[in-house]
Image (cartoon, rainbow, N blue to C red; front, side, top):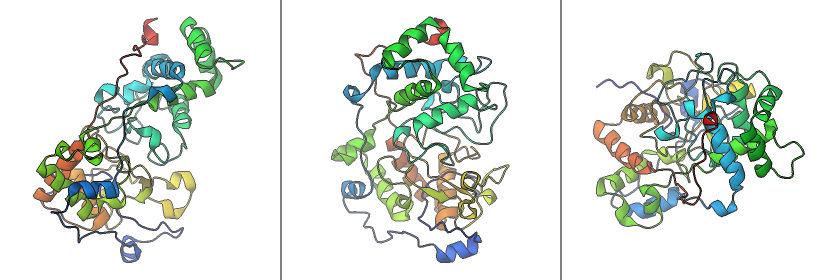
Length: 356
């Protein structure tokens, strides 16, 4: 069966030197982290503890809840785009696990960007934001799409500040969220509020229960999938609390990714940020939490099925040709990371700004 796919799954560790190297040279110099001697009959819970961490329901006592409430309204307000046609939620739909399930997303004037919109769920703990890591924090990230002419198309920071300053709702909410600010409605505070809200978007799952010691949280097949995921070498990149999102890796270590995906463009990834030839085709390793729901996959959304993405990643990152049975095991495990947003019943959902 011919597989077409993409995703950043089952990557392997490699050294990004400043010198550009061919795939053949990379294959010779990369040290593959392949725990091939793992005993599949060993305790899956011990394997999980060695490679992963659990995430927990949100503790709102440590938050600026006024800023979170403001950020939720801003996140859903289409007036943050020039023509009022898109909001943050348009591309990062919280009812669809923080994505829009499109290869690339249309912006304020219906233009599409070159990259897939990644999920915002659990993004507060990422090493950086965007596929190329060009934003250091959620707050930095929040402002970039607003000013991007292909996305929300706001012409400048002051344009949006003046727009929101004329809305009584925002006059009150910004003052409550930032009581010590001389000018509460500022572009910095807009970014801060959206970031505060996005940090609440955590999704504990059955997998977290398993990591915490509930051996019955996963089925036997899911445990086998977990063990095989580790055995294959996927945890070289996809480890820790988020099963990824903590490092950068080249997409296509042992083969060109575009030979296996439907990619229309050979995106050089982080090279555009650093100008370093060693960062050509390097991307942030994505988190695999909720990955079963955040299709299509890869930086360009070129692969629709998770099973295809798993097979391709094993092929172009680890030089392994997984059988359908192997892929199915890994997918079964990955499905256990699907969680749900934690709703604080004591905090009412605010009205959307466009209705006021």
